[in-house]
Image (tube, rainbow, N blue to C red; front, side, top):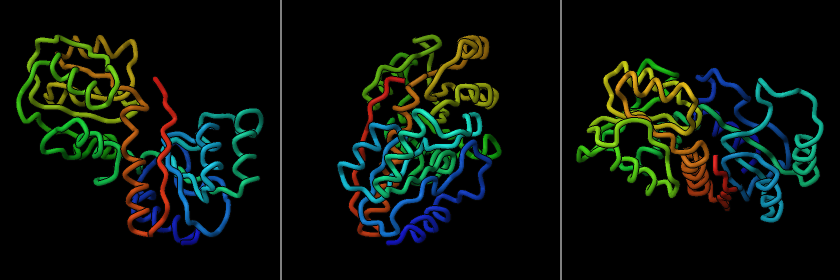
Length: 250
């Protein structure tokens, strides 16, 4: 397929025009016009780009791309090295941030609910651009047991804030750096909230609102959406797809 066809399909499939985001969604660095091999990964770091070059990729598709609103606009240092490598090797870079978090099938939150094994997973309508999800545990468990289940599912020890003996039946979640959505979950009477990161204030929010909080890792909670998107594209358009996990403890 062509670069234009890929970009147009993803713009429609991920509904990118419906989000107010912190970085451009879609094509960020232009490369070759013909797309046969794609590499997917969580973040467009140098290690991912180097691996894509090794795999002769025509396009890299990531969740965390370039040109964030808070970053310097000049192209020097680390950013220059990354972009130079893409341009020299004629590789397209496409980034999809909030649209990939929110998608009902391949999105990070849909996939995270599946991986953890939460029943009746659905979007919490009317909050946070549709990024928050909720569901129930098939069998109510203690907060400590849920911590073990999340850690096992994500192959990473998560941080739990709250009473390990507390009973959990209802769960809400939002991948990545969404720890401040804990207040929304608490206001809805949900027993536990899962996200990727944690702040000092999160502890007090959890304790004072009697809600269990789980910081399961930004990278770990966003591993699965980009993999599912790559598989979807490979199956639909007969592309060669390589998912590359550049490990990140954060």
